[in-house]
Length: 141
Image (cartoon, rainbow, N blue to C red):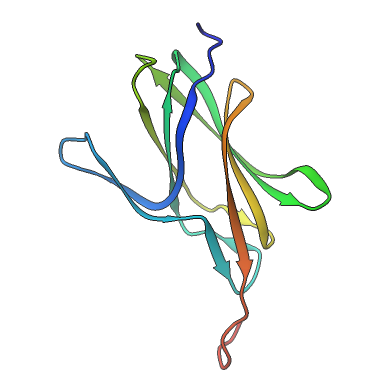
């Protein structure tokens, strides 16, 4: 069973995750799938990635991989790999995991892919857009 790949039930970007006093319910605050900026590179403010996994077995090394998708690259340009471990005590249980992302640098506007990788195999992905916006008249860029 050690080669079993977990299933990813959720991969959500949000401003914060707050737990109720019992620790049994999570509240995801400020979910998002895009950011707007007047200039790039952009240092993203701290945010959270809510991941919910199931069907795993034991200690599983995992990676959150962020890539910038460009028209000339099928796989995209790697922005960052964030390694973490998920420990599955029961493969039937949905295991929540929260990653705090700080200082993510987006070098250019465009599409980005957030992928969850387990044992070197992608098990989930979601897309994120960074848009360049024009500054309002009368404001400095």
